[in-house]
Every structure is written in structure tokens, then in C-alpha cells.
Figure 1 (cartoon, rainbow, N blue to C red):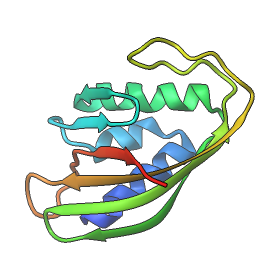
Figure 2: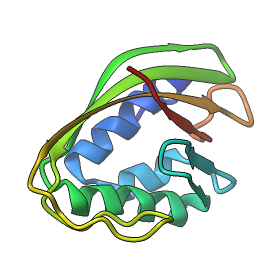
Figure 3: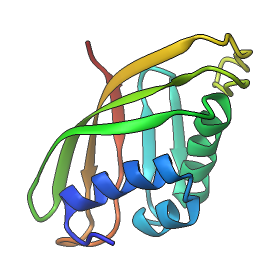
Length: 131
């Protein structure tokens, strides 16, 4: 498991791809606030974050997240990611559930993380779509 901030963001993407939510739980801080700007969703704490990730995994059973780039220092990290998958299950959103469409999707995003201490396995992330 990574202990530097760039590695933590990469490890979170890898944990999602493997559907290893226990590993993802270990990577985030108890104080995590995850904001998905595009969906209008904000979740708090590891359980909220894992629930959010499970919602996407359930809606896109073949979804993978590719890490394009990550930059980091001792307290912060930022990355660019692309998620790809087929919308084959219901997607929970703050506005209600979106039924499966069967369509393939590609979603590009940026994320950033701040650690409460230098190179600690904790993060708070904001995801913003970009094109």
C-alpha cells in the first residue's frame, strides 16, 4: 500500500478496479469529505465514500478507472482519471435512481486530495468532470 499522496490516489483507483472496498476503506481518512460536483453528491466518512463507490460499481459492473496523471507533494495530490464502463445497473444519485441504459460510457475527471499529515494514508477528494 502506498504511503505517499500520489500513490494513494493511484491505489484508490486500483482498489475500485479490483472492487476491493476494504482496501479503499484503509486508504481514506475518517474525516473524508468526497464531493462529486457533476452528480451534486457529497458523502462523508469512509462508509459514505465506500457506499458511493459501490453505487457506481453496481451501476457499471465492468467499470474501470484509468489514472492518466498524478502530481503530489507531502500534503496534497491531484490527478486526472478516466472511467469507462457499461451502464448495466441502476445508478443512485441525489436526484433519484437512473435506470440502466445498456450504453457504454467514458467519463473524464479530475480529483484532488489533502492529507492531514505528511504522507499519511488519508484523503479528501473533489471530483470535477472535464472534457
